Length: 283
Ligand SMILES: [Zn+2]
Image 1 (tube, rainbow, N blue to C red):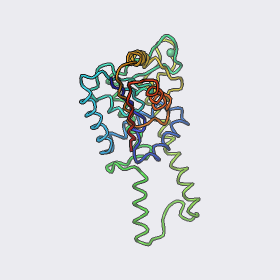
Image 2: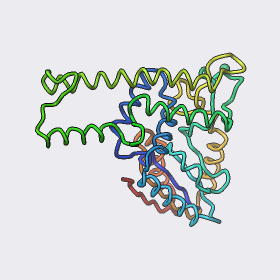
Image 3: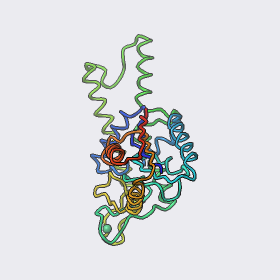
Image 4: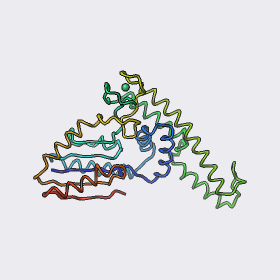
C-alpha cells in the first residue's frame, strides 16, 4: 500500500511576495476564499515552466502507481493536481480546490455542491481580469509588476537620469512607502469589484438566502462536509493498512496544516511496524 502526501509547498513559486500582497488585500476585503482562483488564473496567464514540471512529475508518479492500492492526501491547491489520472476516489483534499460552492453561513440544509462548467468559466474570466485590473499583470507582457519595475529602474540607472515620477521629490524610503500605499489601494479597488462579480456568479443559498462562496479552507465558515466522504474513506483505508507493508511518500511539506501531513505521517511511520517513510522537499 502506498500513502502519498502532497504538501502546500507544491504551490510556491518565485513571485510569492507579490502573491502575499494580493492575499492580504483579499483578506481585508473578506474575499480570501477567492485566493485559489487567483492563483489558478495566475498559473494560466504566466508561462510557469516550473509548475508544468511539477505536474509532469506527479503524472509520472500516478503512472507508476497504476494497479497499486494507494491514497493521496493533498494539501496543495494547484488545480493541475485534479487533472492527473489518480485512481478514482483515492484523493482527499481537506483544504478544497475551489471546485465546489457552499453557503457562507454553512447552514445545515445545504451541503457544498459542485460548480457548473459555466460558473467555473465565469470565475476564471473574472480572476484573470482581476490580475490585470489590480496591476499584478500587464497586458501583452505577462509579467509580475515587480519584475517590470525592477527592469525600469535598471534602465534609469544606466542612463544616469533623475528618477521622474509623482513622488520624485521625496526621499527614497518615503517614496517607496507612498508607492506601496498607492499600489495597495489599486489592488483593493480591483478586489472589491472582483468579489462583487464572483458573488453574482455564485448566487445565494437556496435554503437561507446567504451568499454562496467557494468551498475552500479560506471560506468565512468552512463547510468541511465538502470533503467528508473522501476523508471517511481515507481513514478506513489507513485502518486497513495496519500490519500491511506501507510506503509513505511525502512530496513537499505543509506549512499551513502540518498536523494533517508531516506530523500525521511521522506518527504513522512510528506506530506502523512495516512502514517506510520518505520525504522529498519541494523547491
Ligand atoms: Zn444557507
